[in-house]
Length: 282
Image (cartoon, rainbow, N blue to C red; front, side, top):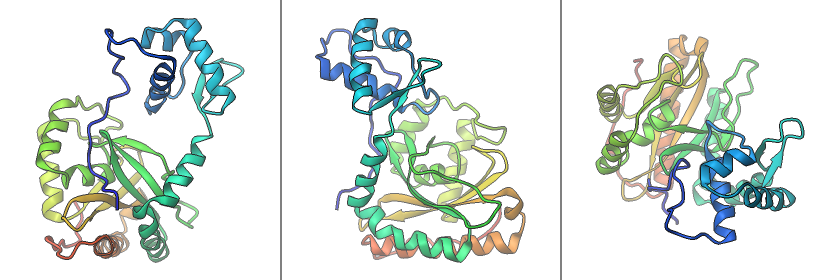
């Protein structure tokens, strides 16, 4: 089984090395990498030209080719380019072949049926949390979490859970490198407070958040480990704030989530559970 572990990747804000001459394929890849940024959904030709130090003619030529193959799409009104829908096909293929999502699907389905809340599965990709599978709540009032959704590792229960149970080296390197910016008024942006929160998550065994990424939405997340006790993923519930106030319901959701995460971990090869969390509200 391929291991999913935190890795360092080139961030989307880095520019190609000035002393390296890129060929056409490398330039096309550099352009596509810019569309990873969740805070910058669209790009214009001149923007990309300035960002990458490519000529506008080169950028236009590459975008025209990428558009022809569906890797980017263009808004006819604004002339801005967006990531293309073709990536849904790659995502479907990836999910189909991934052992993690394949094994995990039954646990997500059972948890969704038992809680009737939105259930989703997340991994670390570079320095981000990314949702790789999701089942939406059947309730009228529900929280959504689309596959492919990304967030920084300091915001939200699913992200903080991944960071909390990552290696000390990765955790420290990540915290040292970031400059947290608030996504809402509840986002933790103080680094000391974040480190304290991560320690609290490990002791408790799961992460909880309320409105850290989206106002009015709460979430709770538990770790999924492999046979070496390394974090593979976080299994999470997204719950409208009004239902997090129902202590009996939310506590029951946490209990079911923890049971599912531990069973999922065993299915991924874990033989010993090192924590015995008690559901609680924070």
